[in-house]
Length: 46
Image (cartoon, rainbow, N blue to C red; front, side, top):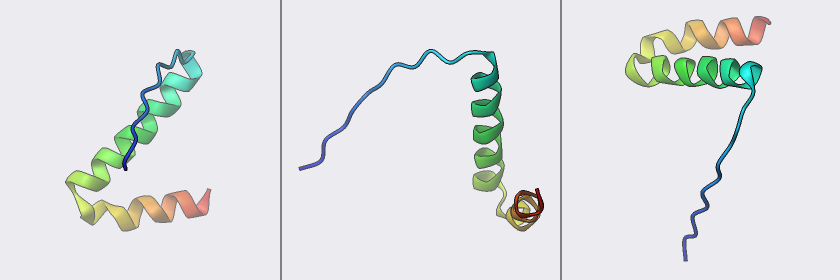
């Protein structure tokens, strides 16, 4: 049986910026997989 949970979050400004940047990176990877190697390289280097 699959269960689902919903959570309501109230992030502060810094958390909102982190969430937006993470979701934007995921969106770029999903829409254009040719960027994946470039983004992974940047993440590994930092």
